Image 1: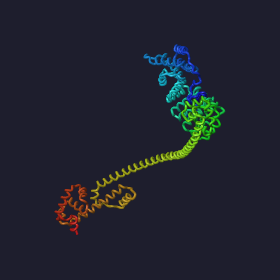
Image 2: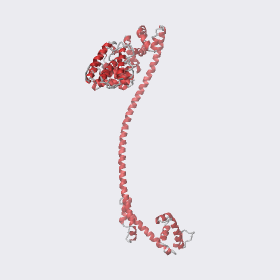
Image 3: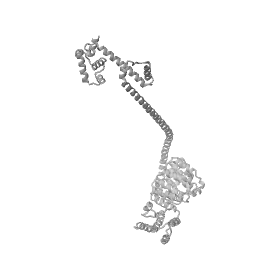
Length: 558
């Protein structure tokens, strides 16, 4: 529970919601006056702008009039239903009459009237809806009283947008908007909508703000909302900014009530007891908000103020209201049917229980403060972690750019390497193409230049193509030398003259230890052809089947 705006003599549960006409007596207007007023409005032959002006003047006039009776409200509602159900195209005059009916019905419902059609009016955004900030404000009040808090927020915001902050009712509408947000459990929005009146730049020129009419109400209600949001220290700081000399007696009571509530809920019991002893126990019963009696019971028991309880029992009006509205320990103490001795016995039991409960709450508060301290430390750590994460993210971007640069570099190297390989392949193909010519040329020699090119290619990776050409030259010379040496060696074998050129090549490669498959691959012949050729070699050289060709030839040459 939190303490906020109410009428001083209102003994009902506290209600933050401000009613624009709450100070007016509930008097009914004559139906003839009402009918006469509507006829005048309907018979006026005016343009659309003139009709809108008439609606605006009517709304402003309704503020100063007492509410209509329930019978009149029912009659106007029936007329509104009839006009809305017309099948023909709605004329400007009919639309004008509907707008006037809505203003009358809205004003009546805001002041306690009831109609089943109010939901349709709240949801109606048609062209026949009065476009006036006060009308929107009334519908916001009606929705709030119907506990349709989200709808009331919409209408209050429409009222502010229509009237603007320079209107004399703007601060009061903003207060109601805060109440609706709070009732809709939008705590932060509710507090912000109050504090912005005192701190917002665009609110500094509002007439009500300049006159300081609502400043203490805004501060106290903001503190009450902070208490509901369990921000007790902030609430106390707000309340300390108030100058009590500028407050009426009622607002002094509301201020100290909120201070007591904030200290009680934060387990600052010494501050509660001090407020109780200095101020609250001296306020007349009739001026205290009813919920405050239950809250201050803890201080009664802590200070052993049994006389205060006895005075409250004797003050029957307040005691009866407390018993009616509360089902609590206080109601049991105020029960007139128990004897004084039983009441004292209950008092002693409650006193001991209250002490234990206070000790328990103090332990909880201490534990909560420790957790809050740890939470602050954790928040600092979290802030550092957030900074570290930002740095990490920055380095990640740098690393990504570096990786991208390395990738581009690697791709570039790969491209140039591929170009070099292509060049080398071209050179090798060119060398292969000229191999036969080089083989038949007796002038083919390996020079110091070839050795230098091979060295540059192997050691430094330079002139790879030229190095391969030099290696190719050496390979040709080595193969030719080997082939020549092998062929000459075979001439001493008996029957070698009968061997064909391909058979001599197969015999030479066999003597070199080249595998059968490799010989077939290099000569581009099948394995069967190679088998038949070897059989022919055995037959021409008279090599026994059980002997190896290579071993037999080697023994024959020895």
